[in-house]
Length: 399
Image 1 (tube, one colour):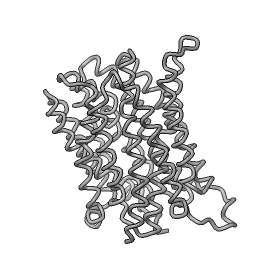
Image 2 (spheres, rainbow, N blue to C red):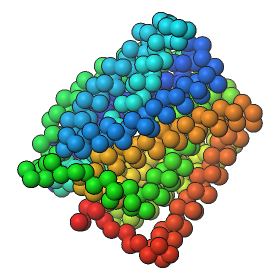
Image 3 (cartoon, one colour):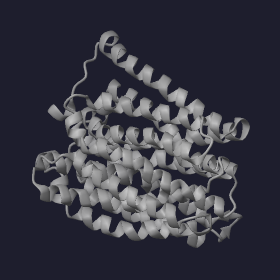
């Protein structure tokens, strides 16, 4: 394994997550400019609906281009630009609607697919050069920890408006880093295959992929709860909402060792089981958040969040590759990304009412129990598909 590839591909992960860490302050920013919990929930629902519908279309665009990396550069550029416009236009109203909220929605269109396309490009490049993706992915965890710690130290509610500018500025080197790996990330397409129709039916008729998407939605609901409501939990136990950055940095520090050892772990644990372990760990985290009485309790629960991220980031994108035809890898990855948005919709619609009605702690408990139940059903689905439907699992990467 050539070390120069580790640093070349790691630069993409590092710059992407370094910039993207600032996006977690959206809830804090909206709260700082006067939006209530209910309003934040409605905004989250709106942006998630739009993102869920558009992410697969952007993935299909990438497959049409036959270049996940070139599509990633375009999408990241649009994400950075539109999100940086939010604080500039939040006080401008047209027909009573803040223009800044429009840009919140537009930027979310590009948020999900930006990460999926970036990871798709890096994984392809790692596979082509026989580079350990787990080691490369640790660069992203390191940068997330660094930026999250920095933001947690210096960003509070009063200056949260700076985070969109911070994100936009640091995405510039990310685009250049992706440009440097284009020749490694994109497959060479035989001339006579360039105009062939993309095999959508083969992807959408794969029951293993469909149940994976359903389970992913169930798994992402707790994660969306953390993004949207963890700031309110911090506030409830007497902490500053701006400390979400410190929690994020602490969480990622436990993700790092699992990513670093993922190459060895995958020799003993399948990609599917790694993803299942990620869900179980996150379910435990949610139940521990229910019992939190102080900021340190939230930090302790975050250990399991880091373990969950380590298992998920080591396996999820690579697992999608095993279920997707080669021609639709970007589409499949962005469909997986859309699960994130679908979960956000459920979290916002149900969560806002439940948090207001039974409290944020009870909401976390419900999410924890829900994801553990979903994990059991997901495991049982393998038996049903293989033994009842009699459809074997076919690894598309070996086709």
